[in-house]
Length: 131
Image (spheres, one colour):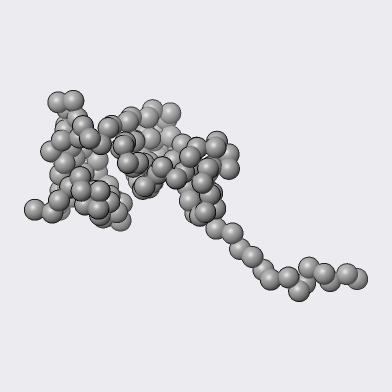
């Protein structure tokens, strides 16, 4: 019996880099999604929350809306230009993120870990400052 594969080192590949466009897991070092070919290098932050998935790039805050049961996306996508977002606020005790856009107030209730990640990124990007 040939045991040529028995001596090879076991290699595990992580598919934890979720594509914001199609939701498929990709290897951490992927530059483009393996399914839809979206450029993953432009995504600064992506997370899945209760009612929506959110993607942040250098230029956009993008919401991918989920259905009532929170099991899948509805297909509704909302894009906000970051440079046009005004009155950005992070609220407590409820972990929510809000801003004004084209005269309308937009509010996103977030899981604690997503709230912290978004706040840290907004500070790093100099879009929001602690007061």
